[in-house]
Image 1 (spheres, rainbow, N blue to C red):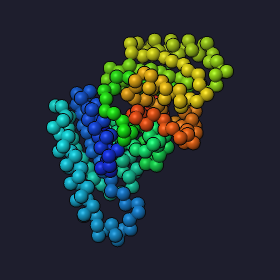
Image 2: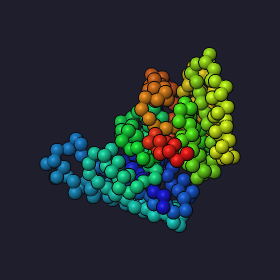
Image 3: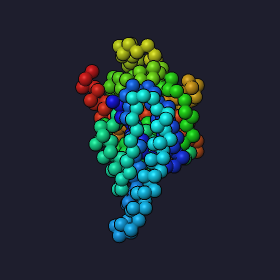
Image 4: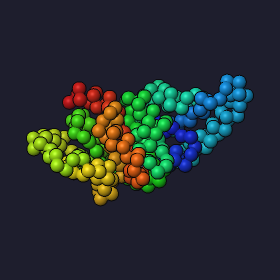
Length: 283
């Protein structure tokens, strides 16, 4: 059974993430959807919390139960829905819930002008990415259109390509999606070695996935190039891998200074690098 964890704070952004999760639920024959809300106690004294915790719990449980009842009629046979409300630190509780239930995928919402940047470097989501090393995460911008996943762009710096590509393809196969492997260099004067290009092309062929293409682009503004590619290829999702101090992380960090947000409407699939290491051991 495939398990999807959907943390919610009942905000519009969280509701969009829920709608997105529901839109992909039909691709799984056996699915368990877990709605999860954490009442943040970090700013509450123990005495004050004791006085109001029953009210907070009652309100949250009523809200999350209503959501569960609203979506139960939308799911296909073989899908179960459960929900849980807890007190504590939000990041820690989401991490614990994912671990306890052996979650396969987490779907979360994000809002604001810096959608993708916030997804990678924002407060709660960023901390979750650092703490959760075993679970892929889909970050859904608040204004993301709910569309079938037919095109996925996997942006890569070509490091650890075999393991990363294998995991991206495994995800893409769930939706029979076309996958574009995109490498962008920020130095037009620097030519990628011919051997590197041939090795990458040969690797793509070895995967024997018919809907797989490899692209190389040169642009001083790597973020802009990726954004243009997403638009021109009508992409429904961008896939990236989280690991510390990568070239892409530095680029996203740099992009905070830019006024234009990085394609805020595109859902982002973030796969932890620890999964790449495990996949590489198998290949």
